Image (cartoon, rainbow, N blue to C red; front, side):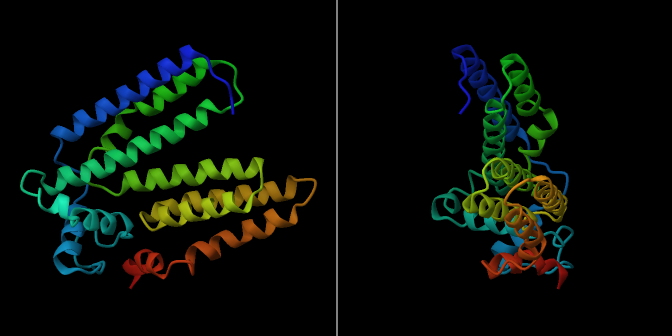
Length: 241
C-alpha cells in the first residue's frame, strides 16, 4: 500500500465529490440516451423473459445489464415508487452507481502506482473522474456503464495478478471479464488483451511460467463456455439464437 500525504487525500476527495456531484446533476435532468436500451428492459419486465434479437432495436445486445435493471425495477420499494421515479431516471441511478464504483477503482489504482509525484496522480485522476463523456455515459440508459465497470475491474485485478499470481485474483479477472462480455460484446477486446498479456507474461517470466501459460490459454474457452453459470451463458449467447 502506497503511503499518501494529507494534501493528496484532501484533493482526491474533492475530485471524487465533484465527479459525484456532476453525475448527480446530469442524472437529475437527463431522460435521453444514445440508443433505446429502455425497450429491452421494458420487454423483460412485461414478458418475464429475455427477448430475441429481432424483438426490438437493441435486443441483439447481451442482456446482463437489461436483466439486472429489470429485476431491480421490480423490487417492491422501487416498483411502488414508479410513478414518482420514471424508468429512465431509475436506470440512470443504477448506471450512476456503476460510474462511481468505476471512478473509485481507477482512483485506487492510480493512488497505488509507484509514482512519487502526487500532483501527477491527482491530474490523472481528475482527467478521468471529470471526463465529460464518461459522466454522460454514467447518466443515461445504456449498457456502457456496466461494460466499463466490469472491464475496469478485470484490468485492475489482472494487474494485481501479474504482481502476485494468486488463484483467487485470476478467478476475479475471469469473473469480471465474463460479466463484461455478458453486458456488451465489445468487451471481447478486453478479453483478448488480457489473454495476450497473460501469454507475454508467461514467456517472459523466468520461473514457474507453466501456470500463467495454462491460465492464459484457458481464458477464451472459459469465457465463451462459462460452465460456472449457465444463466450467464444464456444471457451472452441469447442474441445469437
